[in-house]
Image (cartoon, rainbow, N blue to C red; front, top):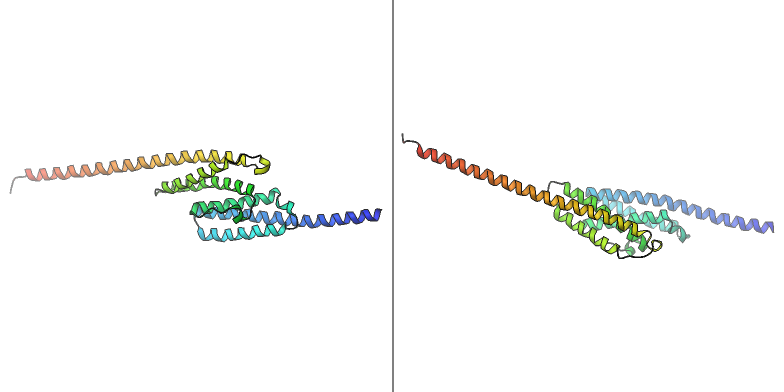
Amino acid sequence: MAEELIQIADSIRAAFTAKSASRDRAIATSRELIRSCAESIRAIHRQDWDTVEVKLDLVREGVADIRRAVSEYPDLYYQGYTQDALKEVVEAFATYAIVRGHPLPSPQDLDVENDTYLNGLAEAATELRRFILDLLRREEDNSEAAERLLNYMDAIYDQLITFDFPDAITGGLRRHTDIVRGVLERTRGDLTNSVRQRRLQVALQDYQENAFREVEALNRSGSLSEQADLPFS
């Protein structure tokens, strides 16, 4: 009886040891994946597109590595550390696609679960705010590009609010949707103020240029009058 119990315990211990090793690999890979995603997003904000492509290739490899690490233990795939990393994957690829005007990748394209995809898309929407603010800080007028991104943020929010399901199904999507709403409204206000300020600057510049031309015209007119009043020598 004791021998049988020992054999059973040893078998379970061996299984746990193997699963723990897979878990450790998955955690390590998830950390590397999150790091690559963060680096790709930083490169997106720098508009360093070559670096973005390199980093996203690493992200693709990382997704495959996670799949391999937990292939024998599907329950590990659905753990928080794994899904959090895959959410960052969605954020990176979605942000890149939206900023560049490329087709938005689907959950199937990225090999992620639907709830992970939606939460990653919500984070991509908030990341667009930073890109919009960077556009508005530049000297050239980027209002049109900023408005395009704002409209995409709006479209994402409009879709997210339609998923009225329990958090157990959506992975806490409601909280992320509320965050998107707040970020969206702040960004809309920032863009509106920026457009108004730029229009005011343009109007002021036009006024100054017109006033300068009028002064020059008056000066030329006055000089001609003085010349006309001079007696012939």
